[in-house]
Amino acid sequence: MIEVYKYRISKQQLDSIPIADRDLILLAGHALNATNAWLKLLRLSSNNPSDETPQGIGSTYQSHMITRSLYGHIVKASNWLNRGSTKALIETYLPDLDGLANGAYKEIRKRLDATQVGTDAKGVISPILVKLRNQFGFHFPKPNALQKAYEYIGDEEDWSLYISEEHSNSCYWISELVVGLGSLSLTEIKSPQEAFSLVVQETIKAANALNQFLVGLMPAVFHRYLPKPALEVLFVVDAVDGKDFKLPFYCEGILYD
Image (cartoon, rainbow, N blue to C red; front, top):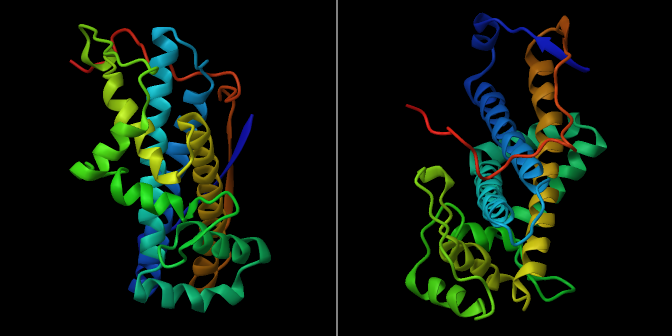
């Protein structure tokens, strides 16, 4: 059973908050909603076995797509946090945040701020998620980047297409090999599998830091302008176990009429 705390706010109360601060609340919530949705999909897709069966290959492709969408989103969210007026406003709230939220803010800068460029102990350019997002995540890569990605993938890989009459059950694996795995050449790690493992770890760490910071920031804005809320406790009794539930690639009747 999951407890959910409902914090009801009137629009009149939101009207009383300065526009810039209200926008901070709205966009922080937007960033949290998308981050958590992609994280959940990644976890459920990753519960599938990564084997050589059609379902295993489809699930691997699916997890790659979700990972790119997740790091693309969190890099965009970081860009918003670093925008001049937004960053200046956030800094007025930092003294009101606890150590966890302030530590998460520093972690976001370390992992997602494009100005913090360097090389880590493994020789990986940091922040790697920014490089990946700018060339492949939410982007169609330019010809030279696509060629480098193509050359990164060896002959021994499964250069195949998996086609089904239902479009959502088709997997154009050769494209994922290049645009997905091939993009990982940017990590400078020779093994695509090791590179993907690193990118997933970096993505999850960055997503968790973004969550930790924004979960601390939103209440600070509310507390500055609104009285302490009365919370209503709700209960969800039919939630599935996320450790056991799987998001399959192949599904019957998935398309809308």
